[in-house]
Image (cartoon, rainbow over all chains, first blue to last red; front, side, top):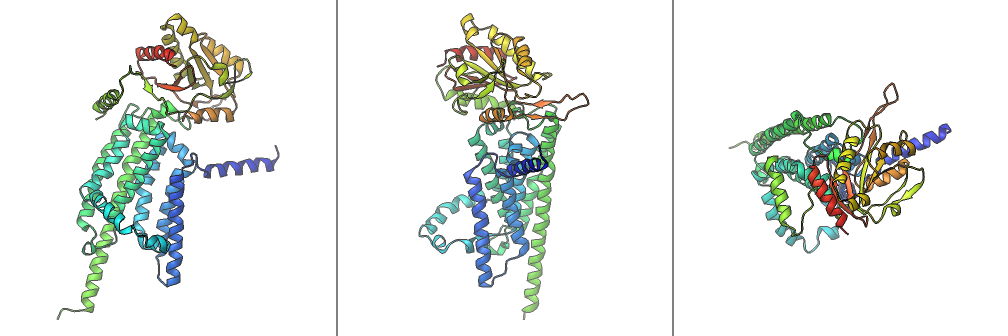
Length: 292
Length: 192
């Protein structure tokens, strides 16, 4: 084989890794729409003369891109045939990517990106009325953390995990539920509105972030320290490469445990920065309008 | 928690249907019917048509496999010997090697003959193997070669069971008791 031929094959292989393992219209369309709407919104705002923070835009685009990478590239293959790579996929879908997206507070930009026709469609009020009770329920400060931790536990019940990894449809339901719940949770926590503007109180946000740590540590440690294989589906379906099942499980347990709970710590730091920002703004307001 | 979840789920699932139940994992309708083009123990290209009309068990492995393959195949052999004579004869077990580099037709023949007349060795190139493993949502992979050129192969440990029409019925796991496997193989032979 000539050197050129070898390179061509390498290039093809590399390209293959970027293509979806199992193409999903829902993931591809959702990610593509999220990017296109945002870019369109950015352009509209620039034409209008409104500034959009570069760091926010980068966080948003990175979050959407990460979601795309773990669901619609060859990474999805690894996530289906190895436990620890599966846990890393869920770390991105449920923790890291929605965290970045929520941190970017992209709603105003996305709204600007919507074509006017859709922005003012007649059923909008009705849809909001119908969905807002459900939204308020899911975003209740007691329900949101239970849902956040509950979903991690639910999909890791061995029998349910087995079915989810074996059935193509259930697999999609699992990943979507993680991504949507992640968005809801971090949206609630990283809400840019101050408590006075309708955002959740900072104390409650910190309490929620701290409350979800122990159950994740418990689950991660239980998996990491287990001496038996808990999730036999990777044996049943075969692993992407021959890795000792217990090593695979230990790594998966550690991913469920350490980086997942570190996200809470980062979240607390960000809430504290919100708090200081609000205090600074109040001081400034007071300095400009001294009480008579 | 795992102690009660499984029985509860299983009983919920059992109350759903009235018929006699499969005792290993029922995957009817979850996966497509059996289909492949592979190389048999004589080096001929064969497809699923050569195996239609009889209940078929499908297992992926490699002949250098130290534990899972011989154990699973021997257990299937034991289960098949417990069936009545006619059913025994009808049953066919397809052992698909995912290590074609080491498993040529002769090696495969020697290997499968040791487990019984029902066992047939098949293999194929990467494309053919990928198509079949992907069809049943399983995979395989190779480890690093050691100094002697030996390497480990990861593969599915499950046995897929098809009725005589080639429709998928069961996924049999290592953890399933032998009695359950025997009962299900009997039922599979009657299933059309």
